[in-house]
Amino acid sequence: MDYSKLKSSKILVTGGAGFIGSNIVSKLLDLGCYVRVIDNLITGKKENIEEFINNPNFEFIEGDIRDYNLCLEVCDNIDYVLHQAALGSVPRSIENPLLSHDINVNGFLNMLYASIQKKVKRFIYASSSSVYGDIQKLPQIENKIGNVLSPYALTKKINELYAILFNKIYSIETIGLRYFNVYGPKQDPKSKYAAVIPLFINNTLNNEQSTIYGDGTNSRDFTYVEDVVNANINACLADSNSSSNVYNIAGGGRTTINELYNKISDIIGLHIESKYEKERSGDIKHSNASIKKAKKKLLYEPSYNIDTGLKKTIEWYKKKTNK
Image (cartoon, rainbow, N blue to C red; front, side, top):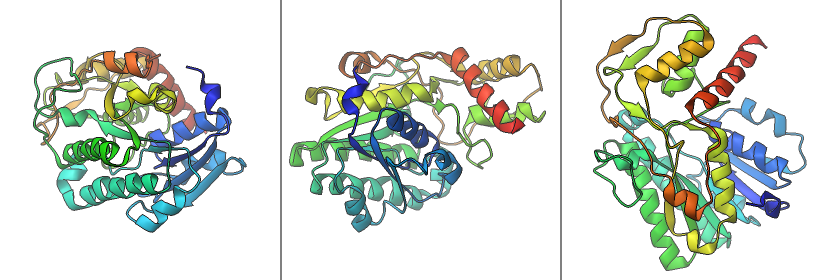
């Protein structure tokens, strides 16, 4: 795709101070876009956007998507909305389902409806592989999902239903991207709800033991963040007949947690015996995406496999640690 077509576009990135959002912002600014970010900094961090603050094409608004009037303001004069704002983590949603619903559903609805009112060209939003729930058949295909296993997964399923419905009612173009276990630079390893890759990397670099939930044979389709960034840009530029749809965005591979831990240990060059605890409620046993639909409609093509992505990620954490 010709990314230069986006030059001078005005793009709103919700959750733009977060891990994925800030990586998207960086790429958009490099492409010559005007980028506005809204983030309440519950999980996002100002340090993730410090490098952009003096860029004349960057605007940061600290605010909450649960405020509908603010959503209307930030959507003013915007071409594309890239909606990344959400309260992530399956365990967190089980601990606090009300907050997860409030941000992930009510906030999403605010942003979607505000985008309609302000005549945004296209609303692109982050969904999740968690919507596949208890489905056993692999690889996972977009039109075959099971029963969701957590409040977080349910919020993402609701997002997809709203987006498809509002496309029919209000004719706004919507594209949902089902992210599969995204990892890479700027992902927080110190949160109580940290994802497995930054957690394993941080622990190993600090010569600390890591915990594996279950027996470690559960598997994931890990996706390097740069591929997710490109998927969002492709979604902006895709033909109109690609809208009102959801797409798997993944690496297209499958790695067990035991294999993942060993790969990280090998790259860092330090092997610390992990400890095992019982499986966590709400976790999917296996995920592996079919990305045929995204390849065809969005021209999505992942550039990183788990090995090349992990090497780049570990390099970043090492540099950050040595600063």
